[in-house]
Structure formats: structure tokens, C-alpha cells
Amino acid sequence: MAKSISHVVRKAGYKPLGNGQFVQTGWMNRTRTVLEGNNADARYHRAAYEGSQRITATVVAEQYRAGNVGLSAEEAPDLSDNPRVKSRFFRQDNLRFNPGFAHPRNGFSSADRAAVRLSRCAHWANGVTELGAAPTGMLLKISRNWFTPNRDDKAMGSQLRVLAALPVVAGAVAFVSLGLFKKLMGERAFKSVAESMKTELTAVVASFSAVSAVSSLVSLALGASSSIVASRSRLSPAIMKLIQFKKDKHIHRLYALLDDAKNKPGAVTLIAKALEGKIVANYRGADATPHLLSRLLQDVRQNRGENAAKVAMQKTIGSYLTERDSLGLSPGSFLDSKADKSELLARENHFVALTNLIEHTAIHADPHDNYKDVRHCIEGFTALAREFALNHSGNVLNVLGFPKSADRAKYLASEEFLDQRNKDKQNPALSSKMRFCADNILNNPHQYGPVTRSLAGMSEGLRIFNHSVLLSLNYQLTRPIAWLAGRITERALAIPNSRVTSFSIGRFFSSAIWALGDAYILLSLAGGSGIAYQGTANPPDITFPLKVPLSAVKLPISIISTATQMLLVAIPAALLMGAAQAACRLEGWDGNIARRLEPADSPRNPLPWG
Image 1 (cartoon, rainbow, N blue to C red):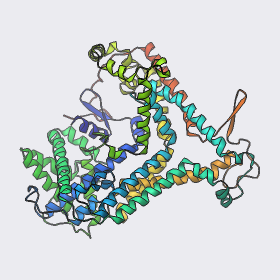
Image 2 (image 1 turned 180 degrees about the vertical axis):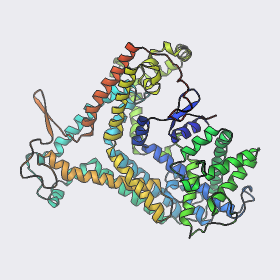
Image 3 (image 1 turned 135 degrees about the vertical axis):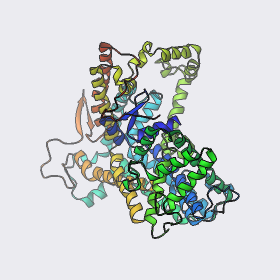
Image 4 (image 1 turned 45 degrees about the vertical axis):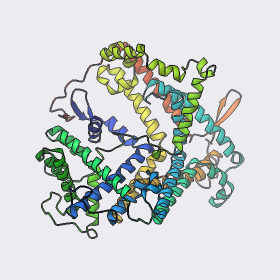
């Protein structure tokens, strides 16, 4: 429940003060939230969760239409051959992260098992896409897993680790660039687009963006093949039992959240705000509370018993999903499955938005193998290599002072460590680690002086720009394309947006754009030939790669290297955080004190959960 509440508060655009109050987040937090978006793991989980949530919505809606809500599994009519249930079940978002469906015990036909396997292959192809879209990010993650696996990226140690890793990555890129641009060094310009495609095809193929574009196209083709070959045969009893289990789970978690919030105006307001971007004004009351939320809260308030409340909630959900009036004022007047297809989809999306508050990667990020791709294999190999290096005596890491994993685990379980941790909790002022921790400075600025706060804020701003913009240019271009693909799917075809499909479409177009830029513009620059497809008659004064003199060696570094750009930002970010910690020593630390209560008329609109 605590994680669900934290997720609701975060979705509402609020943050806790630690004193029972929640206030609206500032511009910096909002900017960071927009820029950071979701990583691939979070997208995988969300797609899988929404896949099962849409099945729950369809099952409840079909049961309500037939007047069978609240019946036991034995009494309820069979929905295993219901076309709407099967259409939701065989969506890519649901199949892709459930490879176990292909096992014979689940009773799938041979065509449906092939559909599951093809969808799984599409997932692995998408892993190659993610790897090609951000190779620098993968290298930085490997460096984190190797040197600082247990530290947050905001920590000073992590910033120093990034600062040390970036020159290595930039050097590797420069070394590769030297080979890729060898032919171009003596040429002035590409003569034509067609000729460049022929003569420089190796450079295009070597581009990470090109690999990402091709693999995303492969992923889309495999996903489409999966949808085509699926026979959508009758669902087996084992699958129907699984669907029933997940439906009960969704209803129970919704009940738990609403039962906690039913008599708490602040909590209801926060839940309503968390749904603002998903449920428009037409489906909200005068107090801006969504009709669906108001009706479900009324069910929980009027039915004291848990079972009775859950039955009433299912009837309300079924009514909302199928009847014309969203307030339930026209019982029995059902929306037409064909003529009102868009309206039915909009209501279903409202239900999914609500269930996203109780089943989300921010609440429980299941580390199941079903969500892993090629990047996780690389990370797993890095972890095993680190364990091997640390656990064998006499190696370089041990000589440098890195403790063996077994010794580290023994220390963490020792009474000495546990006693010290308890002392730090009871009197945090004794913990210099907490006092000078970058994470603590950023999360609890009220405990520090103005200079410390300012320096830490500037450092964090640079770090966000470095990791969310420079490191994620492909991702930032992918997001609007994926969003547009999803909107076209829902508005033109009136079918649910497939998150895995729309994001693959976004990756394909964004990676293709970057690959074309690399091939026709940036490679020309690298050859010192100027800008655009055919260069310029007079080459510009500044040519690429830049030749940086290092003693007797001239190292060609392309200005387009992500690592090089990040290095230029990481240096001042680390210096500013170091200055913030130095300022903390001069200004002092007020201790682990709670924030003051925000006045009711504050522009930050304070709200209590209770």
C-alpha cells in the first residue's frame, strides 16, 4: 500500500514533505520527470501489466452485459470462446512477455504456440534495437555495474565513475572512427547520394543507429507475423483460470486503495489529480473527480464487507465500460460494439488508467526472466565477471583495495555494521556519510545552507541534461513518434494502442533518421568535406574529426561522439557537486530535521493523504 500511495502521489505531480503533507513538485522535478520518461524495463512491465488489465476490463464488461457479475467461476458462463476476450488476450502486449503460453499444458493450438514464439523473437530483436539506440548508455551501465553497483547515479562516487568512464568510451569511439573514416580522410566530398550509398555502405552498416533501425523493423515484422499466424482458438481452462486470477488481483488491489482513501478527502483529490491526463473533463464531476472513481468510492463506502464491496465494484466497472451514461443513469442501455467502438475504447482506457495506479513498475518491478533481453545478458555477464574478479585473491582489484564479495557480505551481516547502522538511524547527525551525501542534499535541501543548495541544484541540472538529453537523443526523438503511432491506432482504427508496437515504430523512424544523418551529413563532415549531401565547393575552416594534439599523438575525436559531449558536461557537474559538499562543511548541516508544515494558502497547494 505504501508503494501504491507513493506512486499515486508521484503521478499527481506531488511529493512528500516527510511531515504528513504532500506539495506540488517544483519546475526542476517536473522537467526531470518529462525528460527521463521510462527506461526499457519500465516500458516492458507497463506493456505486460496493461495487457492483463485490458483482459480484466473485457471480462468484467462481458459478464455485466450477460448479467453474471458476482457469480463464482463454476456458475459464470464460459467466456473462453468470446471474440472480445480472445482479441484482448492475443494482443502483442500480452503475448510478448508470457513465453510460457507456448507450453503444451496451456492447451494452445500449434498456430497459437507459433504466435507466442514469434512474439518472443520480436522481443529479443527489440533488445538489439535498444542496445543500438544507446551504446554509450550501455557502456556506462556496465561501468556502474562493475565499479559502483549499489550507488545511485546522483551520488558523488557515481559522478566520478561516469567522469572516469567517459574518456574511455570517447577514446573507443575515436578509434573506431579512425577506421570508418579512413577512406574519407583524403576525399573532399561525397559526389552524390547514390554514389555515397555504394561506396560508403560499410560505414552505414557500422552505424549503431542503422543497426537499431533494422532490428526495430525486424521486431515489427515478427510481431506482425505473430498476429497473422495466431488462430485465436478457444482459450483453455488453464488460461481462463489465469485470467480469473489476474482479474481478482486487480479488483482486490483497487479495493485496498479505495478502502484506504474512502474517508480521506486529500487522498481522493490526489487520486483524481493522478488521473487528470488520462480522463478528460467530460467524464468528471463538478469537483473534477472522475465519474468512475466517484462511483467506485461510493461502492466501497456503502458496502462494509469486502466481498460485497468487490461485487458492487465489478458491477460499477461493467456499467461504466458498457452503458451509455458514464454515471450509470441509463441502466440496460448498452453502447453498440460497432457503432460506439471509439467510446468503448475510451472507457476501457479510463479503467486502465485507474488500474495503472495499483499495478505499475513503480510499485513492483518484477525481475522475471520474461522481461529480459540482450542488454540484460550483457549486464549479467558483467556481474559474473565482477564476482569472479573480486572473489579470487591476488588479482589487481584486491590489491587496489576492493573487498571480495564474500568478505563484503560477511561485513554487512556483522554485528559491527548493524550496530553502526542503528546508531546512524537513531542519531543521523553522527553519520558524515549521510551529511555529505549528494542524494540527501538534493532530497532534503531544507537541511542545508543556500550556497550548498544552489551548487547541488546546478550540478543535478547538468546531470539530468547529460543523461536525459545528450545520452538519450534517440529516445527523445522516439517518444513523439511512438505517441503519434498510438494515437493513430486508437483514433483511426479504434483499437487499443499496443505499447510494444508503437514504440518499435518510433524506434524505427528515429533510428533511421539518425542513421541517414550519420551517413549523409556527419560522415561528410568527418571527411572534412563540409555540410549536407554533396558538401560545399569551399570546405569550411573547421573540419571533422577534430585533431586534438596529445603529446606526439594526434587523436581524431568526432564532435558528434556522445561520450565526448557528455564529458564536457560531466566535468562541471562533478566539480559543482564537489563544491556543494565543500560548502556544506563551511555552512554546516542542520541535521536530519523534518520540513516545516506548509501553510494551507501556500501556492504549492499542500494536501494530506489522511
